[in-house]
Length: 180
Ligand code: PNS
Image 1: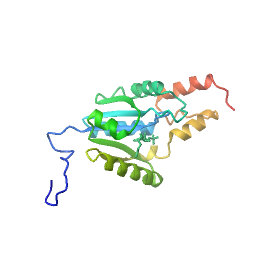
Image 2: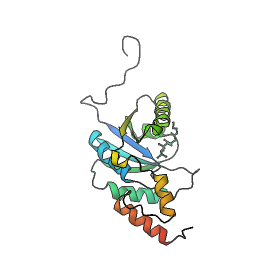
Image 3: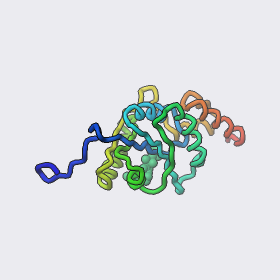
Image 4: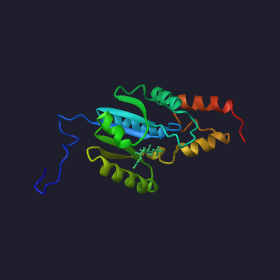
């Protein structure tokens, strides 16, 4: 408690405290922008958990199992990065994993409003977990999974927007589909 009676949470940077950060998302599919955030997040956190939302309401291009595999392959070079999936509230998952930070990327001002709302909601529900925003690398700031899916299903080449292993999977997937 401080002098105003406000509860203070110990600093993320205090020497005795490990930073366990969750990087949540749909990752359908993972992009070079996501991987840039993983690389930078892994330097900030002691442990970074990439958490793929298992959303039964949405019809994804890749199943959760496929996304877990793709993300695990792409993040293999990072020793302190783990890839997992979760369902339900992010803050509940953060509690189960003992995470004290949530990592999110912001590409443009258009991301800001919804990200702010989500961060404030999450903070109200679980003040112990602080949301940390990283600005997307400028070379990735126009990349989105939604556009990659659209370009890919219309027969465009998305190989410069996604890690190599994921480009391969997208090509294999297209081979099995009819492009309309
Ligand atoms: O990659 P996305 O789709 O932008 O990620 C959104 C995600 C998964 C971070 C968000 O939808 C989420 O945390 N969902 C879990 C359910 C939840 O906690 N909802 C309340 C958020 S305020």
